[in-house]
Amino acid sequence: MMKTLMCVLSLCFFSFIAEAGANYQAGKIIDLTATSDGLMIKMDEGLPDNCEGTSHGWMLVKKEGTAIISVVLATWMAERAMGTVYTSGRENGVGYCRVNQFDPQN
Image (cartoon, rainbow, N blue to C red; front, side, top):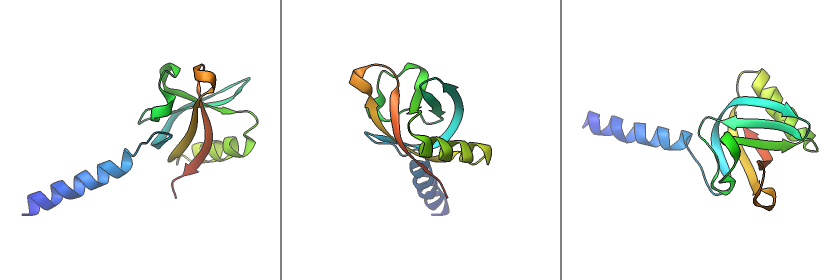
């Protein structure tokens, strides 16, 4: 009985961590870099479904998204870079997937 309970609890915990959907992905930011287009991030759990074809798992926060960039950098510097990233897919089906929201984990 205890073994079954532990198994069920483990499955519930892991399904919460690896939550993904058509336009969002929960997880940890494992890498970031800055380009002339904006800030690029990579998540440990991969990409949302609408980011299919994005090169090497990178997602772009356009430089115009200064509030999003600020939140991402603040969580990165605090070493608490866990959260959910929401995306709008690849612009015209090319380039990197665009991030339009980052919701940090509390």
